[in-house]
Length: 249
Image: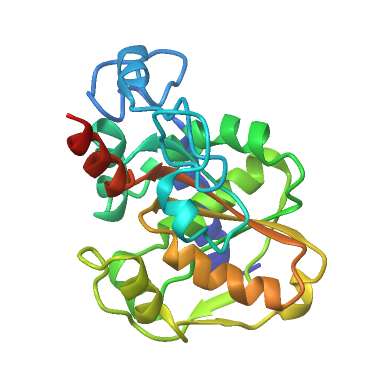
């Protein structure tokens, strides 16, 4: 090992050690103890999903399949999210995407119990790839960081089998159908054989319509994956839920 390689390895180890230590809450910045990522008060105010659709995992008011999944089920066989994409949960996701890299540990810590409870049969984790240009601009792929951390904590294999070959238009204002059209041909599998017969769990920060994970899942299923499911920290609530509530009122 050269002196330069030794120095770079030392820098990485020191950075990992620094990220592993926490002295203040990642939301409210109050002092925390026992190396907590979030204080008790902030954990209690996270908009956790207590009752979700059995297919997409979005919050529902009554037990059963949501209206959106009745119209058009996701390509992934099943999806689950820890929280609604609002309040402190949405703030954590936005900050992670805007440069606060260390927050991947905070999100992964919240996602771990859900993974262990809902996806015990998953034998491999993977992530949503970014184009090289987009990843270079941000400095990291937050989806990959989450998958790597959850792989480390669970011992499940991490699969790096896909790449994003083209930039897609901003999807914030697009509905599901438009998003699916926007994503066509965006992803490519370069290690198809590693997927054959595997129960794959895609890890990401947020599910909006499920189109991104769906495009990736379709490729993986055609490559021979036994199942492809999705785990995210937050999910955007189905807009039809609010429309139906307004009609009732």
